[in-house]
Length: 394
Image 1: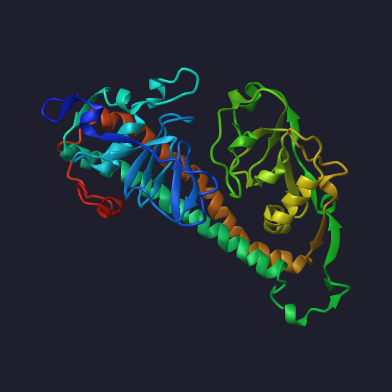
Image 2 (image 1 turned 90 degrees about the vertical axis):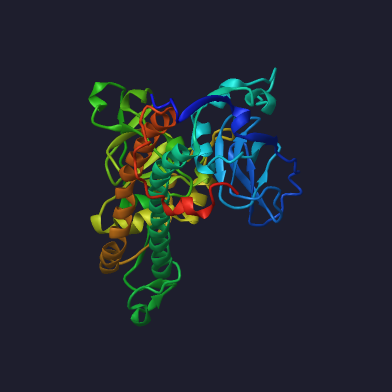
């Protein structure tokens, strides 16, 4: 291991100094652009800051040991510890380094999980010199920069697709709208239909087993709120009960607690649970229109309105979701919209595995670089733009 000369054994408190976060009541959390960072991440915003960025916050109570990097000024919540002094060390490296310490294992609370800063300051660590810190941070930052750029690209494509949909089918400024007559509030050639007339609930019941080996498991909690692709998936062996199958490009609509607005495009053939509707259009040229219609808030509100149960509200399909009324465009307009929107939606779903691979590579390199198992001493590295935002030590 690359420790001799480049690494040394010190205490965590020799590398950084942690400080407890600042208390703030919910009433005091006013609107603003300064993030309030709790143990689980950014929880709200304020118009004042307590700590100048860039900085690092870790979870002190509740979700222990989570590590958050803030580029700008922020307010570290009382449930966190923030780094008051980096002692000349590279901030981005510290961010990655702390992720390898598994600080959640250093709980000192008797009844409530708690991290004590004086306790973790005493943890013995193997720590590299500043030259190695910069190189390791540069490699890992390059992956994070790619992931962030892709995330922004996905968000932009989602916004563009939604905006075109609203322009055509909400504001009714579709191509040629000036020449279309409106009959009883409906454009000529359009029709009012129920969802089951134009789409099917296409899930197929199945049981756990090796026959699912060609599929991925996608439970409801891995669908992102108000995002068009999932946040991840699991191995098919994790799928155990109440299972249904879906195919690539099917529309997955969260039926349990639908108000969470989980409506995603399936980027692969997989398995989910009966907590999701698997919706498929009857006509191929209606796919983009149908997905973006279901993604809109009125569709989610309708599903929430027809729920059964109070603790775990479920929307039902038969005589429920299938009865949702929609204003259905004519075939020519559906085809034109498919030509415009489908490439955007396909680009979004194609980024799913790209993002996963980048994260896997970064996570695989992280412990090996931090520990010195992968040497960076002889590498000539150009620092990514994100590392130019701060000097070696502010």
